Image (cartoon, rainbow, N blue to C red; front, side):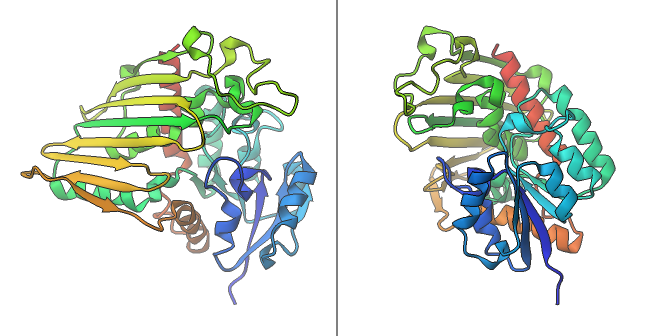
Length: 368
C-alpha cells in the first residue's frame, strides 16, 4: 500500500480553503487526489483555521492539528509538503516570521507556493530563491494558467504554425466592488496590483513569448493620489468606512497601468491592467500575433474560449474549453512530482516564477 503524503496548509484563508472573490480552493482539489493526509493547518487566526476544518468532512483531515505559528507546526508534525497560501507581505524573505519558504527548505519540506512570491522587492526575495535551489526541495508556484487547456492549445498552434510570436498584448480589468480585504487596498501589503494581481498575465506573457529584456520596460499609471485614481464603488466596512479610508493616497494602488516591453527574441509585448469595473465580473483577454497567425484568449477565468485566425486564412475559428480546472491540474502535477521524483510536469518552478516576479516589479517601477 502506498504511503500517504503528509501535507500541511500554511494559511487558513480563501486561497487554500475557498471563499473570497475567486475560484481558488486547494483543499477541495486535493480532496479529489487519493493518498493525502492533512496533518496540520497554520494560521495566526486559529479560530478561522478551526472553522475551515470544521466545514470539511473528507477523511484526509481526520488527524489535522491547528497551529498559530507555522514554525511550531513544521517542528511537530514533520510534513512531506506544504501548501503556502498567505498574504504577499507575510512570506518570501529571510526575516524571522516571514521566512516560510526558507524554513520549509531547511526542513526538507517540498512546497506549493501561491503567487506572488512576496510583497517585497526582488533583491530581498533573491536569497530565498538561492536557498531553495541549494536545498534541492521540489517547489511549484501557483501560476495555474500554465496548466490551462486553452493555453496549451495556444502553444501547440504556435509550434505547429512554425512562426515565433511577434507580439503579445494582455488586457485585464478587475471588478473591485466586492473586494473586502483591507490589505488589498494598500500597496505596502501587496507590492501593488501588477505584482499581486496582473502577475498571472505577466507570467503568460513570458510563458508564451519567452524572456523579457527588463531594461526595455516602459510604463505609466493612474496613481491613487491622482484625481482619476479615486474610485467610486469601494466596498464599505461594517462601520460604514470605505476599505481604502485611512490609506494614505500615495499608498493606494494604481487603478490603471499600461506597459510595453521588448522580448529577448526581438518580439514586443504590452499590458493594460485596471481595477475599474463594478460588480463582481472581471473582463480579461490576451492576444498573440505571429506571422499569419492571430490567437485571442477570451475570459480565461470564466467562459474560456480561444479565437484563432490561421496562416493563409481570413476566417476566425472559436474553440471553447468547458470543465477545465487548471487549479486541479497544477495540484495533480505537484503531487505526482512528489510521488515519482519527476518534476517535468511542474510548469512553474520557483526559479522561473522569480523571473515573472522581477518583470512585475520592473513594470511597477517604470510606472512610478
